[in-house]
Amino acid sequence: MNRILDELRTKWDSKAQFKSETNRYLAIYNSHAQEWYLGWSVDKRKELILVTRDTSKLSDVASSRFITISERKIEQQKYLLCFTLIDESVYEVYLKLCEDLIEQVKEETNTSRAQKIVLERFNLWKKMLERKPLSVDEYKGVLGELLLIRDLLQEGIPAVEVINAWTGPEFTEQDFVFPSSWYEAKAVTSGAMVVTINSAGQLDHPGDGWLCVYHLDKQQNEGVEELSIKKLVELLRKEFLSKDAEAQLLFDEKLYQFEYAPLTLEDNFWFTFSHKSLFKVTEDFPKLTHSMKRSEMQSIKYNLILSALEPWRVQ
Image (cartoon, rainbow, N blue to C red; front, side, top):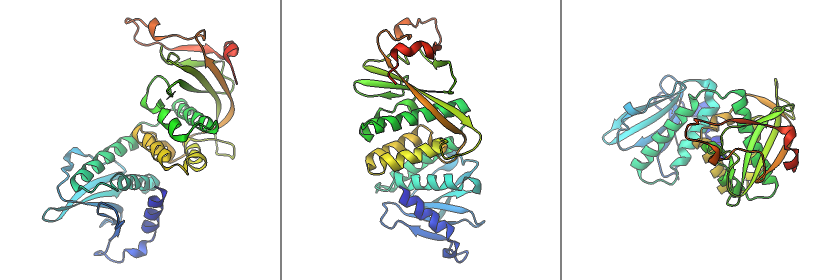
């Protein structure tokens, strides 16, 4: 999809293509199943347009505070569905959104179905754009999951298998579930004495289990060795997914579907990686299980003392 993004950026950055008030739009992707245009609104804001055959009934689709959605009827049974950038500070996000909308319907020949898909996708993006920012600890947790993806790929596990196994964004109890094994990723500071387990079943699952603890320390500024979600996602795409189109598409789908996509667009926080502790979760590993949770208990959260887990440590 990077090709689409690059083309959008080039065309919008070359304002000379739009020479007059009556020539503000440029047709794009003539080979695309749907009719798309990009250009500038009357008040000179960047705008992506999808031509539709029916009204989109936008009363049910609210604009975001960064990107508005509107509709114009230009002739009988022909409408323009417009996505207009109103805040230039999120231009990079806007480019990603446009790229994603175009990609979603590139092979959809039915205009009505394409219109529905695009509206549903925009609603997802709107929720992502307006979600509450992650705390440092939540951000660090996502970084831990991405580091585990990197480590599993480095072990030689096929990329599609790793991304398919990644269930962390689905808020399941384990972060990665393979047919015969599972992994739970945790991120703590380098000097942490404990690791927090968030449910009775987080370390209770059939198959071989592994607890992967990443020791990360927050930094004030970017550096060569520092990590961010954006930097790690770019590394995964370049080093492990660039030659596997199916895995890359699946990876992007999970980022979008589970609202991680905005985290890949800017560097909110930076961390240094200290070391990784890997523990084998055997039958005698100190853990709580589903069978221990009673109906009277609303939730279970407990801490494991890292130094006491040495008998189960393999790395």
